[in-house]
Image (tube, rainbow, N blue to C red; front, side, top):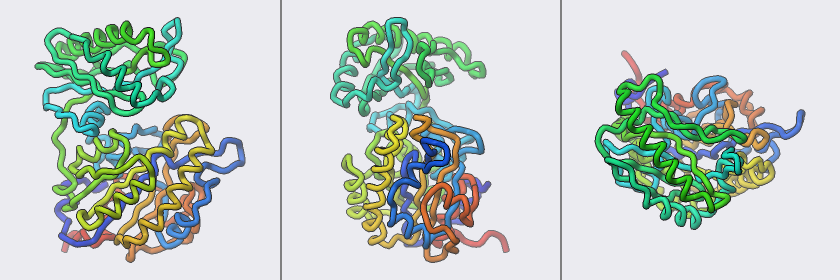
Length: 406
């Protein structure tokens, strides 16, 4: 696996453009044995035609059998080894909403959730409350005070909010309160067993648990959002940007803050985009002359999968397909279409299954694949390969890598 330091030594200037279209959670499973996946069910004539001109395969977000979170899955797509470059979701949410995160700050991503009379989680997303309700509840929590630190609460989107603790001696080596399943109570926040500074981790865990306790009392009468879950405790890292690693002036088009955050973390500029899939493609066309690399992210397919809504996920895939002609009209030298991970409606969650991928360029060797789907791409010439290898392939097909060795 080529790392960033190796790749940057091979990078050469070029005027070619690369578009990475990420259909979040696009991989799926049949709802019944012998049936079709969401992608196989969807009518996708434009993606199928593009696949027929491309080289295809299955992308492995992390490694076989490992179910990825959105952060590491996207870092892999951008060519950053997700095992080496690990970051909690809190930093991604903070950067995604433009919060002025300081190096010593501790950020966590929060979910408003629903608990029953016994304190058991019955809905990890509180029915996906509206963003307006999230703003209202975040304002209620903004009055929480903790000893020795400043507390910042910022609404993000729907049921998601951002918690930032600002003070000296904080640690991000904490466990999460989100049990990631229903029918059990939220977990206590504890220092990780491998915490490098046990005293700092223990103090920070106490602060986080005190925040949760105060929040629980404030939210008690606000069903369905009568509790919260915290995950992804993190502090701001210093990583090489995509311009430093690849020589690319890169931009991101994403409706959801978290994905803007992970893009910003690796140095992408964030472009304005509306809420609809069509508006995201319009933003690509409007800004096409200004950048070398575009990360175009579609979230709604993932949300439908997590809700277990097979038909809605199919509809969103078809909506993406209807916008493919506007992408092709721009004639980028390299087009990659894939997902960050699979989110089968059958499982209502991310899964470990590899993700279909197509790579189009003037210099690719088209294979026999004639359909953009899981089963079709499994027979593609790229085979099953790590997602972290996508960027070197994109750069090579864009004429941006020099020969290695004499």
